Length: 157
Length: 125
Image 1: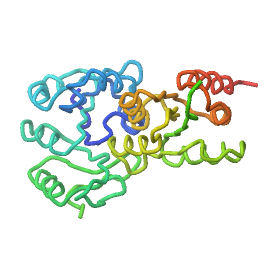
Image 2 (image 1 turned 90 degrees about the vertical axis):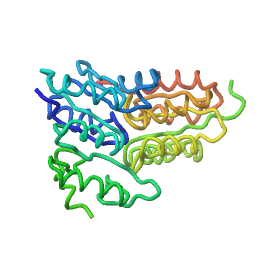
Image 3 (image 1 turned 90 degrees about the horizontal axis):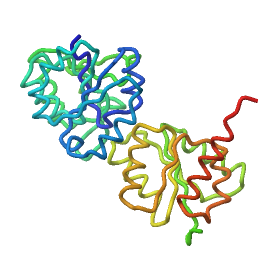
Image 4 (image 1 turned 180 degrees about the vertical axis):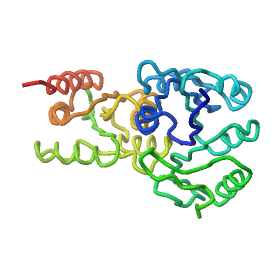
């Protein structure tokens, strides 16, 4: 079973991820790809507390994830991969065209970003990069929870 | 005993924290002891910033709705950064009502008390 979802969410592991997506998809392992979290045992312990019993969490830097992705994609369990930012996810996509579907689940306001959807704030440059990646192939949609409509990145303005 | 009265910060998803603080103030008549923080519209850094701002310079208890997620993570980061904060998860109205009358305790004592009081309020009558 391949990784079922590649999600960009600046809160990483939280309720929408574990409950909203994790339950309906039957997720059995989560790969959290983030250079800062990878370097902090303390943060990793906190994130482990956020997942139900029986769900494994793995932590990786972007470089480690690029190397290990084929192995995770061949895991016979149902998995989800998370990054906190667009650039990390697009780095994975550039290394592996199989990184899809990409789900834009939650990126919040920062200076330079504007609201595209209530849960999705992007700078013009971020949107441009995402749309270019979408044009190059693969599915990139915005969708905070499975019950909400998915919005193709090409339709965002 | 704690020298300065403890601050109580309630951090929760959506409008939950404000509703709990409003209800606690209505029941006790004590205002200003509790501050609500929502995670709405926040990334991890902004929630932590809001929590730290709500705590200020006082010793504090941060009451969090769930023992996981963005509010919990921000509270734990704040506790780690300051060393004068205790975190209690699974916040309920009973523990908040009790807390506002026991703000002279040390943070660790107040956190223990809140855990007991909140737990005791969960029953099957």
